[in-house]
Image 1 (tube, rainbow, N blue to C red):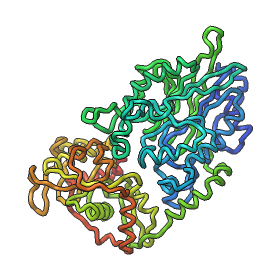
Image 2 (cartoon, rainbow, N blue to C red):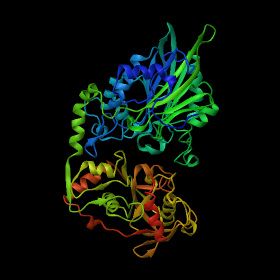
Image 3 (tube, rainbow, N blue to C red):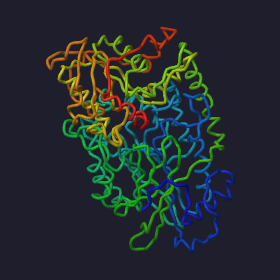
Image 4 (cartoon, rainbow, N blue to C red):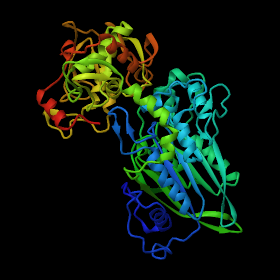
Length: 580
């Protein structure tokens, strides 16, 4: 079993690599010298099926960083030459699939949300050009509503699949559960079944869009039904494009009644008949892992790499085609090579995104930094707090710092700077009514970002399993967090305007819909009374408020309402880089 994400380097892939090197010299897919053209040393023989996979592209179609207004190392246009070369040199059939999260997460996608009349989503334009055979729906596909999703994928030349998205009223599949793709290998028909799954947490994260309309059954239950049906329809090879990781869940499965977020390790243990799984959702890479006879692999996010599975098949008259063995590798693109056809097809979309991101909305006399946003109050976070309170009229505001490398420059502030500060263009603004006791629970939950640190001695202090976007800071009250105390007892001071907050006190709290819907499993807010419900993104509200000011001075947003105690833990958290 291999856990690294190295470049394609095995001689077992001699036919692919040799062809790529010979047919596309200069691609930059580094590998060993090919001196075993007949594969005798590796023991692998044809016939083979080559499966290729991408995942978590998040709109990264071209190698351009719209927030930095400069070239990026990767994008689908950098992977297309590799895909073309593999197709051209492989003697057997090839397939290209994606494991979800395509339509959100990049200014190029945001420029087409919502789609205008008669527009085609640039993600679909790019995928059609690449010749995808199938794609999974990811959780972020639902961020902007079912109608936007359906309009976007209607132009696709391939099916978008999910085995665990059903109509809430009828229980019937809302999208195709699987597809059987017909290919030919050595003059005989070969049938490849492809299905897909996504986290049931869509019901939490995008409740506003899907509640009462779509349900999201458990992943294992869905595949336990679908895989035998594909086999029953003659699938010789079964592939799962899983917008899913091996294990773990970010929401409370008991209170929500949902299956766990990630279950592919359970799938490997509990379901027979799956040959290859292309993972997704975790934004990690898996090159070549086999569990219970199923090959798992995962490409890097934002088209950082292409996952390639080579499947050796054998044929008998009695059984037909069967999988003998399979192996996965990752291929990284040449950072200097981009497909000119895709660049031309997306030129107008690219120009629109650049124009939107480079628009100047304000100026600042000083630079603003996010480096310390998770250890003390900062003007950057107070700016967001102030906008959220002003729009909702709430007493309090809850905000997370999404990137410690974000900030605002001295001089011109553009839309791109705000997009980097608040990257989730799908987050809408809400306000709920909570009690003082619930507020304290909320802060205690957030404080799990820090590991237990008795006597101020711990390594590390920042919990690597608690994402930074789940560390909420609250404005409108004064409080102290003490990580030396036991979990659940870390809020040692909680006051409002100098008076201790009582359990029975009531407040209104502004926060985003991801958090209010259950994202991060924060207590109380999912069941709380909603007193404000807007339909504009927090990012857009920030842009509008900043543009109205014209000049933005960090001195106007100074805050000192919360602290970490003892002070030496602040220094330790900063040394550790503030987590992920």
